[in-house]
Length: 584
Ligand code: DGT
Ligand code: CA
Ligand code: CA
Ligand code: ZN
Image 1: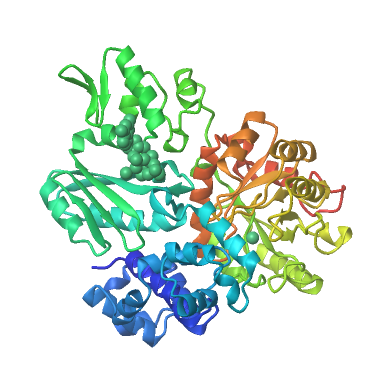
Image 2: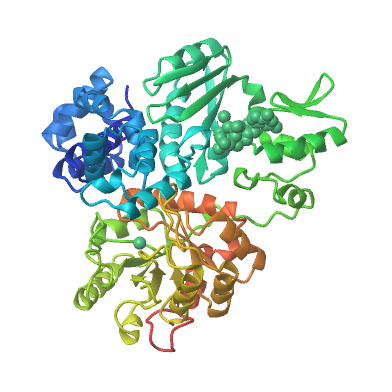
């Protein structure tokens, strides 16, 4: 039976293809699919077994989509989806990843120039043919050519953003775990290390019955093209061109196999050398002393036999983690269980928020948080922002709601927009009414690095600012983000006491691992892991943010939202003139 994840993936694909069909992401149909998939994310229970009537009873799902879900569960696909897939084949979908090419422009270049693939588009640019079309010019040709280069959209360089790969991997792992004989399925490779982008998905499956597993994989609906079908390894392409390698291994070799296939290659090479130094051999079957198996079943046992403390997958890049683990010197890494609050959190007061204040706060409560900051957009963000009056009404509502949650501190906050010159919303006095402010860049991403640096430093200098949100503003695989002088910004953060956010949205994961690592190496920069949630279903981003933090070697003590409420609240008000904030 189709799982909820399968249905969500199907609706996501429908939304994407319908965007092309309708020429706009704002079209009523696209939004209906998106609303439905968010509704399912928030539904408990396996909806595959539900009737049409039961599906319609879910808020956000109408009769037409309920019918499509039934059709999908019953037949494995949907006529409408197949029709759209035929019209927009994978080679054409590649084009949608290019920034600056909206669905309308794509339709125009397809109709007028016959562009069906990235190669066609490159040829059209080379022939200066885009500039003949309405709304496009020589500058657009240049911009698009650059974007294609940057995305590495062609050939073997093609990498898939984690946000696109992770749901596919998770759905697959879930499906494989249900196969008879399977005792474990582990996503490995760069995906498990939580790289921003992945070359392919590697899944290791422990099973007592490899032939049954391999037969099942070949028949999975996600398989678009088989590359290789062996006795213990299968490789295939999904419809969006992503390669998946599935390997069957023996349950007693799970640790060795997941260690080997998680990599990185550089990490494994050093581990193998450590094994050789001890007279052992390390491979995907185990840590071996001649015929004798020293360790194989768990990764922990293998690290222990090599006299290393366990190294979390996010650190396995051979950038000092093995030396640190040998000396027992890995920092006390932040873990999801340490997190006590979320400090970047939207409600429907933000134009892009999708749930009420009450629903969002209840979701934070369900996660057991001790504090949460409501940070709707300030007035400078066109369409999305709230003006002073709206903010004051909001403050009142937050205060009233706080009475219902005596064990959780509710902070009246704001996501301030950092203007091109470092200016912020409202005025200095009004900004100090907030208990907590995140300040973030939402535009002007291609200013020169020196100006971006000044811009960030100016925002940090404002006493209302507690944290800088999604530092670079990048969108992985789509937008490179602002360039700035990292050392100067880290120094600014250390001196001002402004925290750097680690934004857990999978398409952001911002600050980058490199910047976090440099911050943690200094030791005097505070970090805050946030979800930037616009809906309760996005609370899961805290797990992703924690994994991103670990890629940058963030220890528990550097992350302010691991601190107990009293300590955190005191710190949150430390930059404000005395008596201004109601906190602590
Ligand atoms: P990717 O897919 O490019 O994002 O990066 P990875 O790290 O997932 O690389 P991949 O898929 O080629 O291989 C998965 C893991 O398997 C890799 O991290 C380490 C291990 N592995 C694969 N081939 C070799 C090899 O020839 N030597 C060693 N030592 N390890 C290998
Ligand atoms: Ca891989
Ligand atoms: Ca691979
Ligand atoms: Zn936000």
